[in-house]
Image (tube, rainbow, N blue to C red):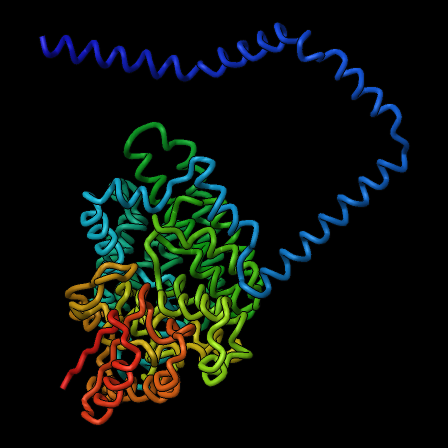
Amino acid sequence: MAEAATGFLEQLKSCIVWSWTYLWTVWFFIVLFLVYILRVPLKINDNLSTVSMFLNTLTPKFYVALTGTSSLISGLILIFEWWYFRKYGTSFIEQVSVSHLRPLLGGVDNNSSNNSNSSNGDSDSNRQSVSECKVWRNPLNLFRGAEYNRYTWVTGREPLTYYDMNLSAQDHQTFFTCDSDHLRPADAIMQKAWRERNPQARISAAHEALEINECATAYILLAEEEATTIAEAEKLFKQALKAGDGCYRRSQQLQHHGSQYEAQHRRDTNVLVYIKRRLAMCARRLGRTREAVKMMRDLMKEFPLLSMFNIHENLLEALLELQAYADVQAVLAKYDDISLPKSATICYTAALLKARAVSDKFSPEAASRRGLSTAEMNAVEAIHRAVEFNPHVPKYLLEMKSLILPPEHILKRGDSEAIAYAFFHLAHWKRVEGALNLLHCTWEGIPQHFVCPLKLCHGESGEHPPIQSVAPANTDLREALSSTHLTRRCHHLLCANSLWTARKHDFEKGKPFRDFKMFMDYSILKAVFVVQNSLMFSSILFCLQKRRKSKIKLLCIT
């Protein structure tokens, strides 16, 4: 009985859905019928004749004036849009559309979605944390033969850890092999070569595979590990492209003939994308940046679903080298989405663009007197979000910690990702006048125990979930560096000292905290002072008692 009732309800539901699908046609005919019935009371014929008479009496001067007025308005809108984008780094029309029009047109409201999905919030944040905290392949990884080996020749030390190289071997077996490789002698040799630990054995196996036929993966291995210059690597990758393109076209025609052919086509696709991406990176290394940008754009258009290679991060770095900041903003608008795993490149590049609009005229003293402008507030908040995502990056950008060669794999939101980002993007930050100064002023005012994702206090109100147990993976991915920065306790004391010095007069005079977000990323007025000097603590406490702010919180860490 219950099954029959359930089936009836499902059938009724399907009928209702079907009726609503075609209900708009019914409404259309009803409107036409009403217009026909009410044509006499509404005097539709008379109104139409009046309109046609008015249009017939218009002279050509009216149409000229109409065209000129519309052109003038369009030009003013274009000039305003260009000025707004230059000043704030974002499109005014796009901002209004996303903020105000999308909810009216059926977009998802953040508040309603949060309220309706509150039961699934913890599981979603856990999934986001897992995707962000896993080990990823470095999209800007160097060439082993042409770049990493130079470090070995000079110092006699290995630039990569065994754990990192083992992860690369697993990636190569995943991308460049398939179950049907044993049917082809050259691919069978390369399948064993990717598992070899000895570099010379891998290179010998690649040469052996090339003696059989033109094997694309063999050329890839030689370009990565045997070539001693970028020019040699590019030459080998071009040979690999010729061989890989032919294999890709053949497997594309046979991919629907069975699971074996489908797996082979997937492998050939990975090989072709890898080759084209590395060719673009070769062009970038050799100074042909515009050519590299074109190759990356074409590759992203040809294979839009292959996001595992993170080609957009290569494109962002190349566009920053060209100082094409408008194109960088367009790429960020496309890939800075909540459904995609974020990275230090996306977060800090967005912060760089916001800082670029105000950094050349930014002064901490002036900002303390007059308060932060809207553009400065946007830049500071963007830096706060970036530091919240990965708090290790500022120390490398500000050259407080020594840079080493980036690993082939990075841990999202970890120290290895900070090294990889700063290694390639430090020059872009230095090129923007005042950007590092703004980063330093903003980052120094943020208590490090609040933004550090390795501590339990992170994640109380932040955008990103807390990270746990990431330090072992970071240690496995990079070399251990001698610590030259200040101890944690001294660093907090300096932060409190600088904050107190900057805000002392405002405390005493009772001025409003218009620029308080320069130091804290809080939604309410909440001050966190990390102090261990009793005199400083008593002075701050006295001034705060004068202000009588109930929402102010003091942390005294001795």
